[in-house]
Length: 58
Image 1 (cartoon, rainbow, N blue to C red):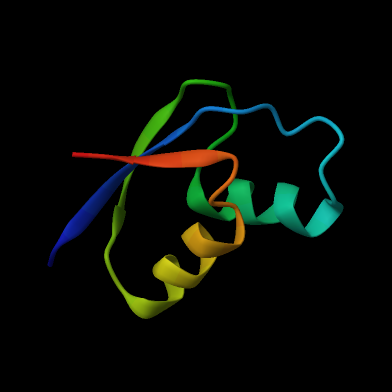
Image 2: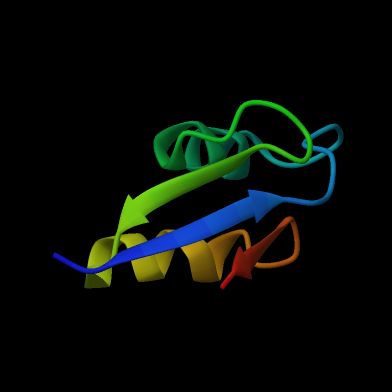
């Protein structure tokens, strides 16, 4: 399976609760933390929802 590496680049403070839950679901808990997630439509939707807080790392 293909994977995507993502990194949290902005703080979760002052974000709505649903965006905080999305970051938790992606496995991002700390600033500058990187995780590798499976590339599927569900994950792509979560990335799109919090795209202003994260970046995709190559």
